[in-house]
Length: 319
Image 1 (cartoon, one colour):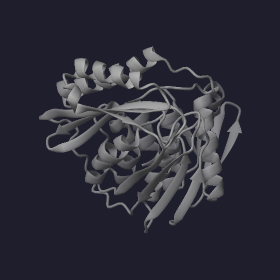
Image 2 (spheres, rainbow, N blue to C red):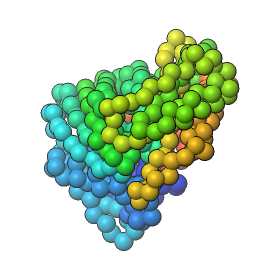
Image 3 (cartoon, helix red, strand yellow):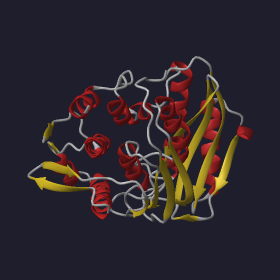
Image 4 (cartoon, rainbow, N blue to C red):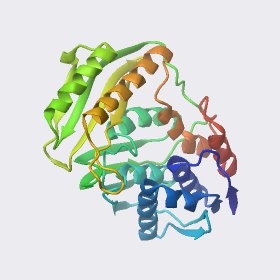
């Protein structure tokens, strides 16, 4: 059993350890993993979803040992699966956990996952499908994600569908720094909340990103479960499309309504900061580089620049 002591342990590091364990068949003990679940209700909700999903597939089991979390992987098989996640979790986090090991199978696997599709715990579906999966395709991993219905945190009645195809890993890392970056526009999504919020966010994005308001669309999502708000910007980087994203928190992990105008403006400002970073440095969002880690470890590709000590430890442990 692999003994993991990860600096800066968080939800993403724990998720990636589970993904790599499923892909390699190596069990692990994660120091402080169960302690993290007790301290962080959002992670606990995700962990509960992962445990239920893997149990339904007979693909792995968890055990708490003091503050540590133990995981023993089972065998994943290709097929078509329908999974359910909770209203205070993230359906996308479950998809991100499952996809790396599924690329090692001989045939395509399809997942339908109900739950929260847009949450500040994770990413938007457009970011994953159009930015992250574009990078992974250049590494030889073929993945697809479709949004069937919006479901926001605290309600969770959304639906996403994902497909994973057998990987053709090339052992290379595509360039992640772009020389020619052009911002094309942005979009504000809002559901069950005042459209005045969307108008404010459009004005903030226009002022901070230098985009004309005519290039910033407002989409009022009518077929959505629960209230929610997210913003996305669209860039062309050396001829490739890139999505930048930010999601507003509307409820906390205890179900308390916390959304207000200040939080909405902070969401718009967060997106504007990502746009400024992209224009100044030609670098994608740091979360995109971080999400490459499991695929780098499985393909023997170099880790992205600035991957950090946690990424190196995981790659060495499961590589």
